[in-house]
Length: 233
Image 1 (tube, rainbow, N blue to C red):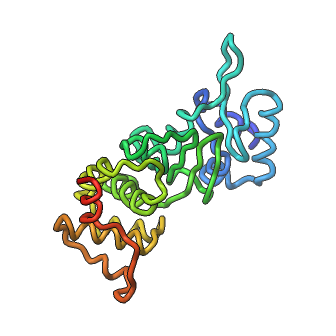
Image 2: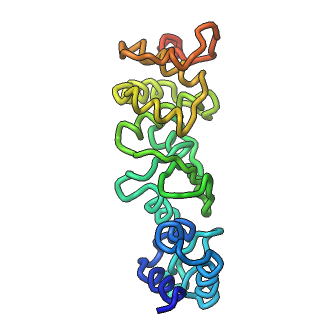
Image 3: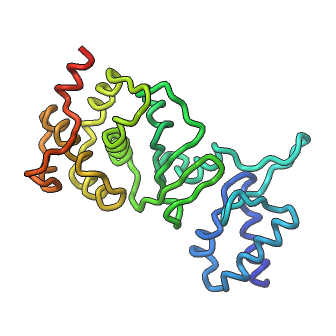
């Protein structure tokens, strides 16, 4: 069997509408052949109508119905890059803010962090995917959500401060130093965000050593629970 046929057979085994990340497929299974030959096979299959190109390097086997040809939807894209049990990524941005009722604003676009891509940043239709090389478990996901809100809360339109307090109270229990260390290295968060996290942990009596990331002489413009509670009382 030729290399081209091997690539074709592998592609054809993918379920309809499931994302086919050509770059990842090449690196994981076909790096013994030339990239040119590998991608030429994709081009031929696109011309033959066997697969559809969603964006550069990303394809799917379309589903054909009596209403026409259907390609991967937002749901299919998220299933691939987040994983069926959210073990490959997390949704951030306004979709996440709205999910937790921090705002009534709804975004058509979706921002996610994912370990299921080999490229630093990728946009597929309305989904923006940012590469993060970490293992996603519940504690990691919840701490990312908290840090994302702390980093952006001043810019969230129509922010519901009462729900923000509830959100913070729920997320505090997921703090772990080892997880924060990893997120600082892989995602990167501003010092003002870490200062906000320290203020919150101190307020709820959670032991932490976040000072090691901060400059003791700096006056960070950080969130304070006391002030937030005053605004909602």
